[in-house]
Image 1 (cartoon, rainbow, N blue to C red):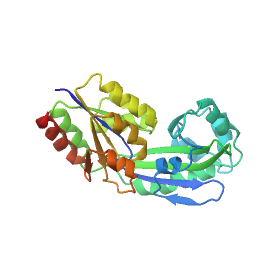
Image 2 (image 1 turned 180 degrees about the horizontal axis):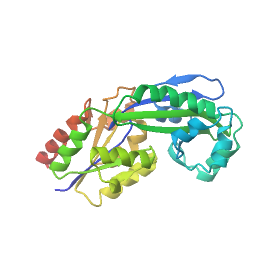
Image 3 (image 1 turned 90 degrees about the vertical axis):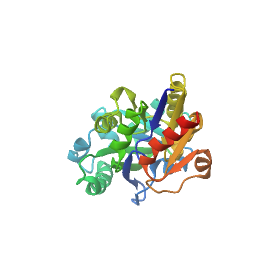
Image 4 (image 1 turned 180 degrees about the vertical axis):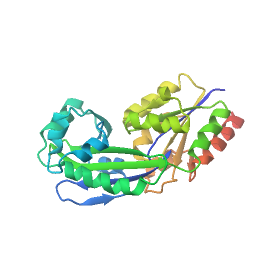
Length: 271
């Protein structure tokens, strides 16, 4: 029997530190779950920027984010949204906003870097939440993560059993690929900047190839994929408030990633 396990990244494979800055008020939201922040308003869209953190840090803090994105041709991906929206519409907001400054991004980056800089393996992602109703960049966001204890061993245990592992995440693909190299997941099984709809499609496509497909996630943006999977595993290794609909969808709830191989073995024995 052929089995595939699809993992979310932030909060599932990685212990993740997140921060968001409200551009209008200057308020810093520490350890905020950016997907829940995005889902709180149907007009919000979470975008992942493909620019290198070093380049953002070198720029003048007074420079408008929109000018930097436009002048440096910074690509972006839509990571999370509650509604279907054209990428060009989001690009227009990113290029025309006159409030968010590079200094806002730099402030977020410094805080997160201070949390993860001592770790051996780290991933740092920068993004923006735009508001399509107000036509502004509403929040600057930064997330940094490091693998949970046992993550590498978990993937190895699954591979020894002949289980195929995948990553489907809203994070940047380049960052995910380096993390996948460390964990031992082939790069051709890594899907970055995946919206909830794309995650769902990935799971459905894999169901055409495998007898059983499991989805391991931790947040509301994993809900569609969990519903599409044969087995849904909800991770609470990084504790956060989970919506009821996410909890009710889970076949298993775990507090340690290292429980996943045992769940796979249990499912196989019952099949």
